[in-house]
Length: 368
Image (cartoon, rainbow, N blue to C red; front, side):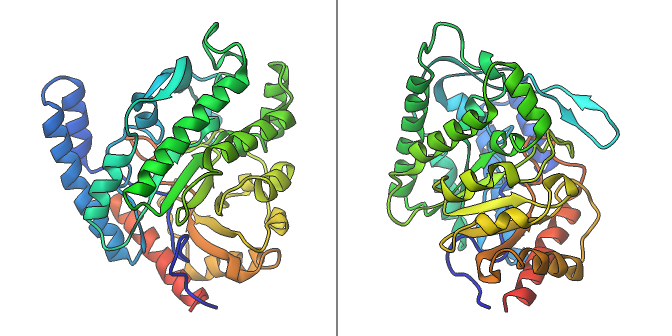
């Protein structure tokens, strides 16, 4: 077995990391008008330098800024792309005790245009402050459309949904090209809707809104491809599939089987970060659909709980996955980020560090 020198790496991670108290306080003060933009950026810069050192110290090759300039994984995209707004979603988060939590999500309020860089400043600062491979994350295009189902686009804005999809894809193409021009080589697109559509209950909900869930999967796959198909040479595009991650809660359950063929053989991503930390994700059988040219990063380590997995547990699960996909096509990561929103998951920075170090140690033992 061999280590990898290009993305994704044998020991990788999704991207978001726990914000330190100094940063969450700076966001609050900025929101309340107690500090200005410059002071907030200074707090972000200092926290990012520290979190880069945390990742490098853990032995990771893939380095992110922890999404420390964002309040949620999609927040900056909505703030910086003209035509997007926020409304309450039609879905709710759940925990294992039956509690539900409402949330807000992107909404299309006007014609969508890229009028400024979205993640360019994030990449430039990160790239200057790490010797590793700087990874930039973007929310998926489906995440700009799905949450309010047939009410996801303001009435009268786009009479033809395909025109909206074309405009949105243009935003992604421009941003990825601009990132590449700055030297970015690793872009990850974070998707929740396609993973949710693995859940029969979600499929029924979509069907009740008058939309065929299978057609919606195909539409989202085509949209994704339109966003990334013209990416410059040298840019690796990963996709991360998530069933929701808000303070340890989730949105859906269901294995990848119903959408495996479309995800692995039609979706034009170079690699897949797959949530596999609980039974909600199903078994490894869908991996048999992955073609030989693609890589799967197994999300076996939970970012939702402080309990630390063991090397032996992880090696056992990797061996299970290798029954369906060659070990050379596998890597290891947490199932999601540690803080998809500014509040973070119910873990400590010590838990986070230990889990990242565990991933590196396990990968070294498996792919030595």
